[in-house]
Amino acid sequence: MFYFITTWNFLLIPCYLIGTAVLNVLQADSFKRVSDRIIAAVWLGIVVLSIALLATSLVFPLNSWVGWCTAASLSLLSLTSQPTRDEIANLFFIVFPNLALGLLTLEFGVAAFTSRQVTWIDTGLYHYGAIRWLSEYGAVPGIALLLQQLGFTSSWFALAAPFNPPILDAQVSAITNGFAFLLAIVHFLIALAQLFTNKAQLSDWFIVICSLILLPVLVLSTMMSDILVSPSPDIPVILITVIIAWVMLIIAQHRSSSVTQDDNSSFKNKFKNKFEDQVIPLILAAGAVSIKLTSLPLLLISVIFYTVFSRFCVKRIVIGGVITILLLSPIPRKR
Image (cartoon, rainbow, N blue to C red; front, side, top):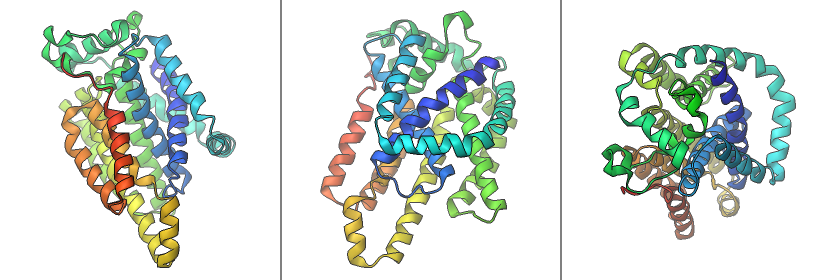
């Protein structure tokens, strides 16, 4: 349990750094509230780090050293951005001291639940096997000849590989799903707090309603609980689907208010320089596809959203296409 908590806290740092840098590069003005930026940043960081580790597995085995070096390299790259450094400094001195104890308490509860014995059958069939292959050998050509399911390597397994050392066997294989579940609970509590303080937006209501449906199912349903306490890629895909819809609501609401407040000419000028945040659902959807191929419809919806909110601008569509291809390029073909 303590391994779970320690790893989550160390994993949270690079994910937040990477995601914050992405938000600043994209000039994501839709995410004005600190809580929204934190949640969006962490999920973006998870997606980017997972794909980066999957790409790294094509060259190196994903042992603990390689995993942490990859995370550290991306974190240092993120810190080269001055806005990112400023944002992190403000978070550390203003937000972190007030919420650290509450977060740690929540982590204990989630760790106690997700560090149970893994019983989901697919874990023994191929999930943990894929993680061990990545950890010890990286991406191995011809591995699908051993077992068909190993032909597609999920980026979720690549993220889990550095945190599943051989000495712990399969006892911590649910560590990544536990981390995603922790983020979902934190997001629910943040949205709930917005409701109680009469500061709720449509996106907050959406998260509260989705969480009240989804979280009890994950905890109380025998099958879903078994899937949660495993390295199954189904859990992150479910949660990322909710996050993408939440991001779309925030962007749409911000865009609508900007159109209302600005006159037509000023809006056009503003649009030329900003509003790059519509690429965020595209990044998250590409990450979902890298986790599980059945997420392709999610990518299609995100492409439509991106195209419409880019106002069918050819240049932006090309940029979005290049970003998507780059994110999907590390996915190994069936070998």
